[in-house]
Amino acid sequence: MFKALLSKRKKSDWGWSGDYPSWDAVSALSGGYDQDVILDRVGSALMKVKMGEAVYERDSALFDEPEIPYSILGYILASAATSGRALHILDFGGSLGSSYFQLRRYLPEATCASWNVVEQPHFVAVGKRDFEDERLKFFNSIEECLSCTGVDLVLLSGVVQYLQHPHEFLDRLAGYGFPFLLFDRTAVHHVKRDRLTLQVVPPSIYEATYPAWFLNQERFLAHFFSQYTLIAEFPSYVQGEENLLIDGKPQGYGKGFYLVNSSNPLS
Image 1 (spheres, rainbow, N blue to C red):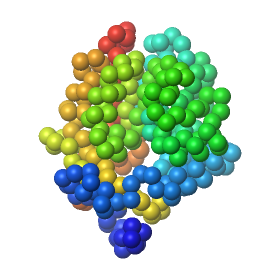
Image 2: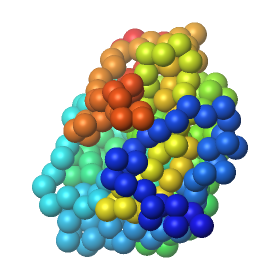
Image 3: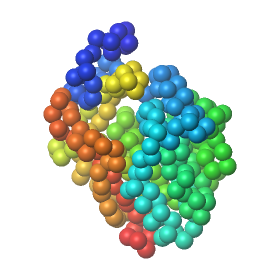
Image 4: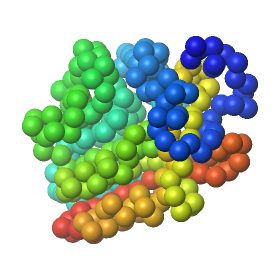
């Protein structure tokens, strides 16, 4: 039934729509993030990157020319310089290492000691089997990662808006007290409340739909101000995400934030 609903959609239906009262209400219309097609497409694409057949992958799409996320790279380098040593990076919701493979050529061992992806169990299983190496590791939870290594910087790229309870997660994230937090591709808007939408992925990427939040920026940042200093905010590096359409109208945008624990000199 899910695929039948997708096949009936027009191009104008792709993207974000609706203003739903609950996660359950959207989930009844969507397939969720654990669909096999997502893992299959991402795994196939990243394998080509690993084997040198493509330059990088994003959301299962392959690219032959490099697209450097300068904000992410710059703040990772700044964090390493502030720390005076190579960083142990936790990439929460990092797929099969998409950001790692995109950035690895620009991150020498003196900057990045390890890149640790926390993901859904089926992604972790494939990651360990096909992509793990001396620097790239995969874990089922933040706690599992911390049992193996300390964490200096947490990267969250295009992930918070896809959590069922984003504010509970952000409270928990702040409680760890990690030295550096780096958000990118986070869907926010200026409306004084969060908005829950249905996202329909263009079939050229893969056939999927899932719930997606647009978060109020002030409420989002309020989780961190007691312990962190906001050093910078910046637009998403992905062209077009600086102006996101809901129901065909520009009502949201992709945003990034770099926060430093107040005990760090950079703050």
